[in-house]
Image (cartoon, rainbow, N blue to C red; front, side, top):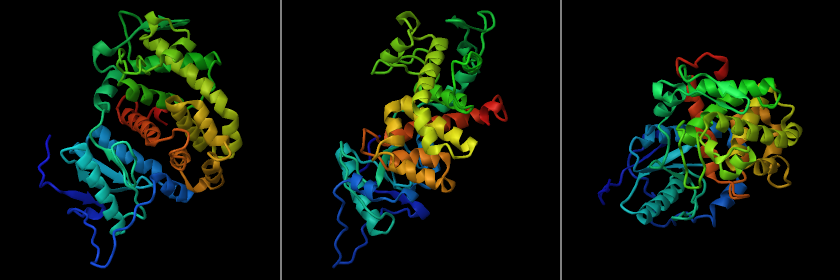
Length: 372
């Protein structure tokens, strides 16, 4: 959709509907930008992470459902260090013009008192307040949930893998039942030591990684319902003929997650072992989701590296003031720009959370132990 050059609408919190112009007196100067967005992150106190998990999840919900301020996808949303929505712009006719307008809006948000600081951004440069495009690839959650729960007969599955045998050709069952079958089997064999909340998040990952499509294939050559990389498939000793096998994919993802759990368990317990059990399990599950996305080594550094673990140390001492999600996100937010941590790390976990919520709103799974 091309934008009219005269189209200049902007919305902000409290329903301000006209563009945020820098309402400055003739003698006032526009606020100067910070050198970089990372300097703003580094100077932000840890307490600003209160509510960040819910805030980022709300913003991502607008993207995934093309709702709220993303009901028109030709927009960019602006938000601050707390994930609080500050406003949106309608995109211009070119990427460069959109970036220019984003910077004008960032400056205006500071001038109007909506934001404390700003940093200019560019096509390959992050600015602050942060900006998120509404128009980006994402799964259709409705279709993904239907595929996962086997609403369509063509999506029901059966098969064997290793020592596992699920359903039958004349009586196939939903992908959800397959996931729970593999999880329960490996738990009974004591091959997994994972939080009770893990299956729910693994199901969410299936929806976000592939929309539950067996033949999903990324440009990076990740394959299958859990988008396993060639190295992961090799580690799980899955031969090429079985790369798309859904039971094999679930089994491999559980194996990798269990390996991540073993690597993270000791530093996690040292840092957060004193948290209430339910909160501790949820936090550990969220960190395992993050490890699946970005690697266990990087998550481990958030727990024990001299510099990267400082936010975790603060949240561990003040955990009563933060949800498990706030802690998981705060550990990353205050390390953005370090060790390749970016906003995409947060978006992935938020999307998985939204996928689990979609599943747990269905008649099939609502009010079941799976969703507790």
